[in-house]
Length: 95
Image (cartoon, rainbow, N blue to C red; front, side, top):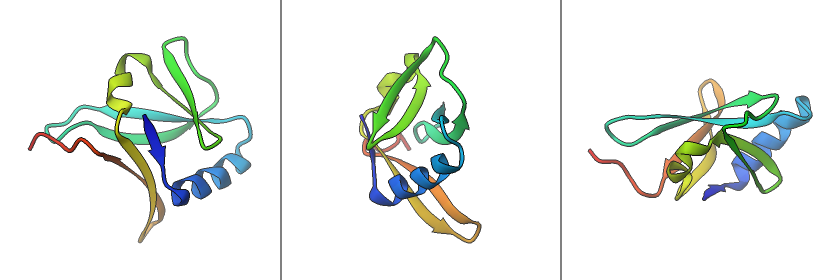
């Protein structure tokens, strides 16, 4: 299941404090080196979503892609543009 670093937790808590009641939607796109993940704020989940809470942070993702959420770590790193969420699969990719 999804794991989260302390840095990602602090970042998302700050984001959600500005947007009370929001969820973090995880989008998953296929790729030759394994799936790519990215997150956006969402107001609500759909009937086709799975909702999980990790360290008090609410996440949603498409239920049919639950198998891609295993062995996944969410981190927050500083980039030249500011804080950036980074997903890392502990499974690796195919290339």
